Length: 447
Image 1 (spheres, rainbow, N blue to C red):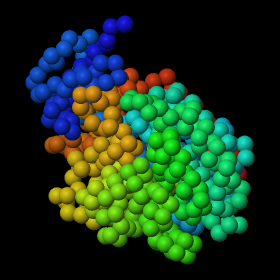
Image 2: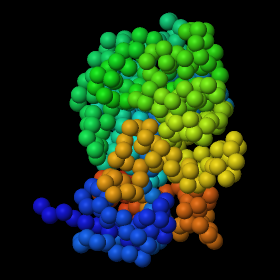
Image 3: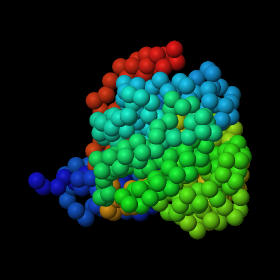
Image 4: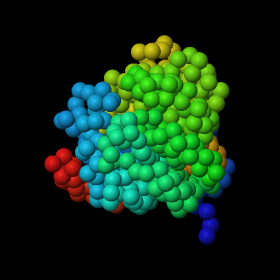
């Protein structure tokens, strides 16, 4: 079968001047960048006129909890910091069922896709009885929507009876966790460039798993060459817990269990001192910055630029929809922009910088060198945004306007060379029916 080439022509603006005249896509890859005013050097079969669109690489979400779309603005969890917030929600999440995972995954991925996100990492760590196949269910839903996913096999093994935070009904024994981790890697992890599914191992946090499970997960990840993910240094309470439980600060504990390396990326990474930032950078350990969640839970400000300058990849994550309370990547870019300016100079936190976190930075966190940029050889994951809403009226710089004026929805989204969103709607999806199912399941979970 002959190759099909599409020219996305003359975008209104883009992240790099090298493709000011657009990009040529052949099958699922970018094969040519077109200069401003230029034309492709190869014959094309189709042209999409993008002169009304700002063109970005597909946004990449480096940390999420899809199931939490079922507990947005949950009354008993309002106005609480992380530990008390978790304790109020763990008993609710313990009631999750298979249909709830199916629908909450559809909701989270749909919301992400509509916001220009083409690759999403999810951290699922709840496997109550009857929900052992949660990640299998998520894989099916991702395939239906055509979204690229990095699903992490999360885990909790340290319940309240053993000094941990979660209730016993939400934890699993460690042999079960490791056996299922290996099963999921063998079934779903695809190492090749352009892979639509990858698996990582993700013990939930220092306060919900044992030291033995952390070590065993690191060994299994090295054996199968997959990545490692966990929450770390999110709150002062976590630091105090680690000192009391292990006699170590969180990063020292991470190093002790064999996780301080470039296979690992961490969610939040707020409370590091200067020496810890240096060590993280030297190790090449990535950080998934989650600004909305950090603000909602009053956790603190991630030292993004210090981490990046030290050598750590910095990506963006929306985090769970119980601590955001949404799954919108382009809005998360704006949050990172505004929050960053409370810590750093205006000249340091630019719209280009935060967009780079949501694209190339997140790709580096996930270990992907085939995503995150509009370059020849990269995957054809592309988000196109129009500036035809009232919020953009009078805006001067189209690229800056996406961030400053608060874009919240893409007009077109392409994943692996296939349009998945056209005219602001996901192809072949009844969004109203999905919303009604989600409402019903959320009500059942809360009852």
